[in-house]
Image (cartoon, rainbow, N blue to C red; front, side, top):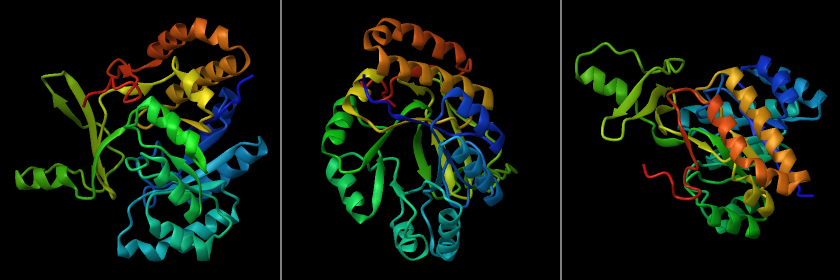
Length: 310
């Protein structure tokens, strides 16, 4: 039998936790916009506490995103927030800014830390550097190919998390670029600070791609026009011993996240228990994943096999 990775998903609300557990999720990444980037849903402190209680009752885990890039004015908020996460028993805080490590050493020394910078987790030296600084997990960059992922896992001194499904971030700026542009044009487009509006797209007529774009208090975010889907390519990642598979449900509804979680749970369990059966059925898994996809979101394997070119 092959060891099974953790299946990590991103719920939209506290109400999603129970059905996602029933669908097969092992862990959840949640948080609030003040501290975390590009979350599927907004979770207040009371929401996080409820999520922890619900998940722990079923022996599942809750991780909280504290992966924003912090300016000076937000630094005083970190110690209290991290202490709160430790007190309620959160299983890990995801960070990208070293300020979080510095604050955690004093405020929450027992809180596990997961290093994630979206783009710079590209080699095992860097992964192990942050491990020696206090991180127990590293989240790898989405731009890596399969060979690089496998090599990093072979040399990693910490647990490794890889995104296997969902959209990826192509660009982020701390500036509110859309709002500034519209203001320059003399248009009253209310974008800045209103992160719940996810209806804007950048359209590429040459490729006929739509890139979701929005602004919030963390700046401007431009997302990929396609979703990564590795449902039919899990065998090599599992053989390599990758510790956590993430399904990112940003800009998707709850039903989508639940159905996709159920599908990946089935595929993971099948390969772990009967490798040949998974290999025989993996094309069907891909067809089923495609059937769940929104009409305007096709899938590919991202950078794993250099299929993505944007």
